[in-house]
Length: 188
Ligand code: URA
View (cartoon, helix red, strand yellow):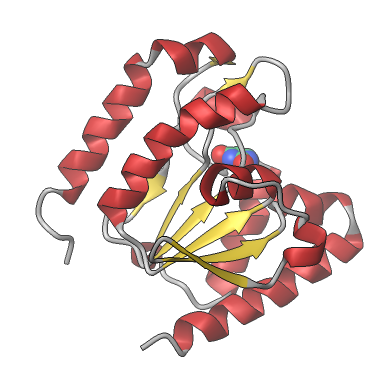
């Protein structure tokens, strides 16, 4: 059962994102605040919406999204256990989001983290690491590791797009999701 008020609070943040002039300055299309359960145990964080996401307003519905969603279900996680979002909430005007965009957009993300209050936050790629760990991370080296910071548990992995681009990236992701499954199974 969802803690009363969480869904309303998340809807408030989505509205804040829709009206945010700074987010708009760097991005285009529909805002993509995120989707999933307001009381999720696991929060998946990517980079920024792509074209398909910017058309629909839904996160991870393109090729990367299909890979992510299949790995989530293969890890035995159910829809009510997860929430999926990205630090940057709009399709960036110029491909990769700028650091200024990430630093601004994470203010919205951090509010979402506070509300959802997940047990594990899965950081998928360097942009997610920069936004939440506040540092550059070499995800090819640090993937599969768990980091504790300010009372929160972060699990580092690669962005699903990396798995689509490189066969070795897909293997890395599949191994990491197996570890994530163990982490979640043994958490209580
Ligand atoms: N990649 C992301 O990082 N986020 C999305 O929502 C879609 C693709």
